[in-house]
Image (cartoon, rainbow, N blue to C red):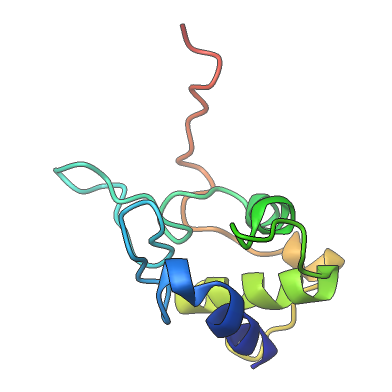
Length: 117
């Protein structure tokens, strides 16, 4: 899987080899928004749309070289991250059309508090 190769060479230093992260802020896999304690916010548990993940990776990652991945590499990395979270199959190819068809586990649970006072 090309996304795995890119992830391991460009992302794993912060996010771990399997998305487990090196801190709570860099964890990408697992998480539980329904936990009794502080929810663990990850791609799989918190993010409402796969397109948001694509946009974030494209604009801000890798942290030491933002915007250095091609669009093709971003699709591949996002596919790998979504696969690590069990959201898409290993064989699924992401592109402009298929990205919009991905159903995120928290798609109906996201509350935007960005405008709250």
